Image (cartoon, rainbow, N blue to C red; front, side, top):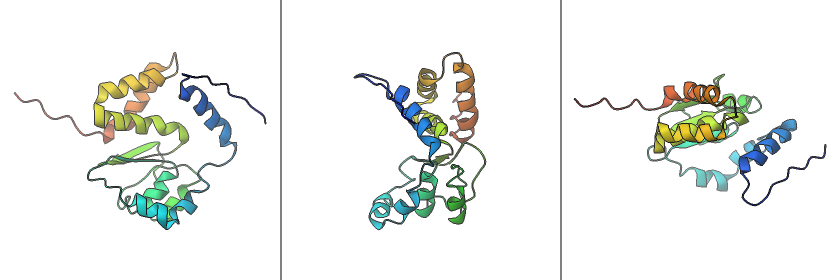
Length: 167
């Protein structure tokens, strides 16, 4: 298969790179993740991740990295179907859903679940209005409300509850 995706200066990378990513799924993604988790140099750098002071998000095979770092102890994860057996073998429960978060750690399963991670991070750091604005910008025309509602349905259970109003 020979495909050309034309891009120009000032292009929106989502317009080209998501299509490229979908087209590349003809092969399995994340095939080198197990090798990465066995590389002491890489894993030693990643051991500096600290959910007490950072939001940590992993998509698909990234859940295996978090599992091997010990960041998913007692936290179920979402991942892709290719990586699922490896994450389970690492002792982590894998959920059959696109997004899950506990505290400052979030995982998403499936390449197109990336917007759940992005919306969760944006809502946590910049607020719900900023997250909704970003989702609205990237949502397909004619499906914006449905797209945004689905995103909120998936991430809202994992966002901190708003502080009660002072009377």
